[in-house]
Length: 279
Ligand code: NDP
Image (cartoon, rainbow, N blue to C red; front, side):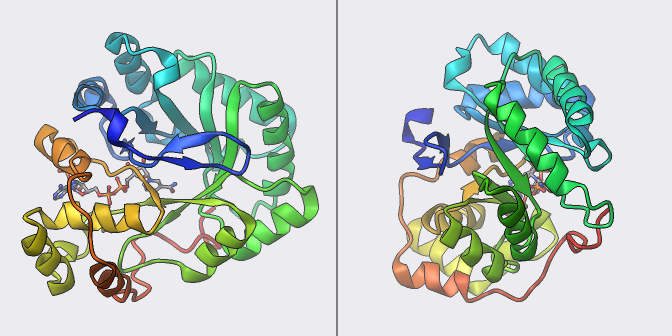
């Protein structure tokens, strides 16, 4: 298995992103280097981390140890809520993330949550534009923004995020936000693509029937559903065999009916707090 098989999604800023990557939320900082090294060995080239995960250093050590040329990797990190603010505040948080990662640029930098109670995301976004202009982040985007946050951000700055990284899995598909994003040319990154293991996604007949039909696992069916719906995904696993399983999703294709049946599972079953309430 190599990264050559992973399609790239075109972004609205002219750049592109590998559609399948590896996420490190809740990966223990002490184990991150080993786990990310495993992921890179398997073939993953797109890594998704964040300041708040506390494991940027481990991601950076794995990158350095891999010897993989920097231009073959796609690295995302995120600005945490208490670092939102003016240009100097955002710049300092960004510099600290780059230093922990041991990199001189990232491919994508995201505002992690809108945190409307702070009311600083528009100001923060203007600072993100400056970071992108400095080329130390190639693309800029947001995370957990609902349609009304996106509308305000775009209305007040005229700058459309390249991506919106939102909770999205068969039980929580956020159709309103996804439709608004599509209309604006914003790519959707689906976090919690497997529902974080909090729902019995792998036991639902719509998923198990497709798994049996294609001779694959239910997790592979769910990841394949995301890919065929056009989402960018980065499932997390601490286990090497599951990392390999989650990456091995290019040898089969779901039928339109199978995709539609899984899409029909929507039930507003979120795993996180509502983005208007997270501070
Ligand atoms: P996922 O939906 O990727 O689920 C991860 C869980 O599924 C873990 O418990 C893992 O267990 C299990 N799992 C993984 N692969 C398999 C498999 N093949 N079969 C059975 N179980 C499996 O949840 P995440 O929250 O980690 O989402 C993915 C990434 O999205 C994060 O790592 C992070 O990068 C990003 N994210 C972003 C957020 C945001 O606010 N922007 C919020 C949350 C996540 P095990 O490790 O034991 O294999």
